[in-house]
Length: 426
Image (cartoon, rainbow, N blue to C red; front, top):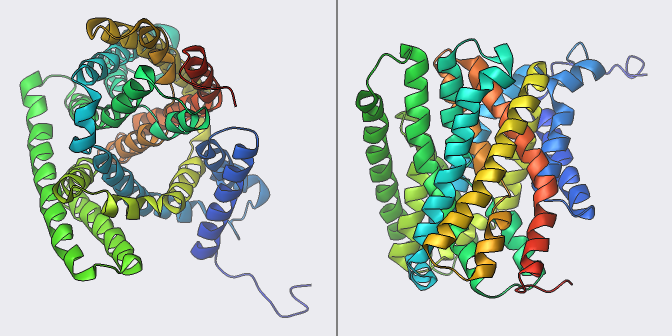
């Protein structure tokens, strides 16, 4: 029919591939919400439909779906999306609001983050070779994988947790503690990840022969420079915003451009662009004493999230699905146990009410965007250092853990909040 009309299929269109990613991701998100699952689960699962493993069966000659096009998209979409996520995380650290949450929030946040890190690290680093066998070649690789996976285990997905709190109209000490912890949790995870991933990559390149202090030197210097760059962009955006008062549409574009440029410059300089954009958002919200410029980024969140999570799903490494499922389940179990015990210990030290001590751990189980973002960032760094195998394994393992977590944790959060007496079964 196409020949009769003198129509010939040319090279695959990047626009077609990107459009399909957005369309399938959006469809997946809508269907996920229909069955009471977070949208991110749908974005990921439907993004997998455009994975080269899948499209190779439908279009083996690559006329319509080109794996190379997906690879090209991964890099720039990751930087844009992670810059946005980091900017929004920084913008959630509004000191004026956080002062009312009490000093105990800081204690709980640190302890409930430290314990899952320890659990995941120990299980992967020292139990991985026993349980997973020769998935990785050396003990150093297991230690490095455990170190990075442990830092990622700190992060909690605020969107899923907060959505449940709103749904059941939760109020009380438990709700206040949850909101405080999820606001600080991701920031703590990003800082821990930068240190942990820097040490892990140095171990893998140098075989673990370099002293710990020397391994930490470069990540710490990069952290300081990254924060400085973010602070500069924060003051620059605040200054520019004065010329666009009352022009919300134009200012939204300015915010979009500023975040992308900030992340791009940090990436070009080999800084930690996630930390840079987090510092950017933190300065903006606290210097302006308003969330106006953060809310403008939030208005574009859905579009960014669809593209990011769909392309991550399309980038899933099916060649290691068995290994990734095994490692992902180990991470999942260790993180769940660590979050529960860490929350119990943290609330005990902080002398929180009994129902907070009992139920907080379950409400902090969701894991999503930041975890995948950090895993994606590590995979990119590892690939650049010639360590693509371990980076791919970590990303695929975290994806498995997140997909399972996002299916089972929201109902658990709902049950915990209702059982605590702070929410209503509506």
